[in-house]
Image 1 (cartoon, rainbow, N blue to C red):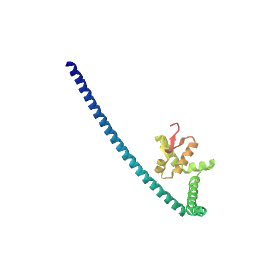
Image 2 (image 1 turned 90 degrees about the horizontal axis):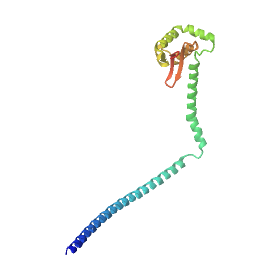
Image 3 (image 1 turned 60 degrees about the vertical axis):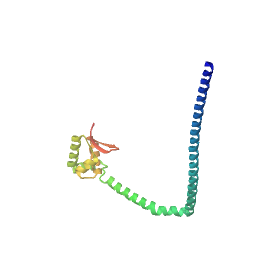
Image 4 (image 1 turned 60 degrees about the horizontal axis):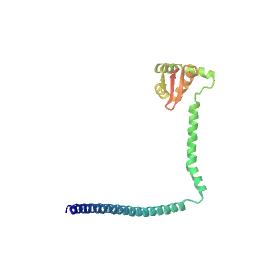
Length: 185
């Protein structure tokens, strides 16, 4: 009898394992079914969105075709109109600005030694003051000096170049702006 009881126990143990396996398999099938259901929903949503995108594309293509029909075939007239209404006024404004800048840049530019002497004599006080300012501060931005002397920045740059020609200080150009510096700083 002892032999049967161990066989019965083994059978019951096997039956319990089979039941557990069946439950696990059923649970995994349910999970797979849920996954497939989610995947079906995602695919259905993607199909709907694809249809909407195709409709949008068709709408935009029709709109594009309508716009193309409205553009004149003779683009030379359009180009001429753009030149007349936009390019020429902009060019004139640009040319006027260039002329103004040329006048500002050439005003008082010194080309010969005699004019340098005249300028030096005429502006000796401001030049001396600028020189002493640079020696004191070691460096100064042109815009700050222009504010201090109440003159245009171009004038300060001109004075700085004059002093630089006499090897008294340096005019330094950088992205931050123009600076006057004491020699060797």
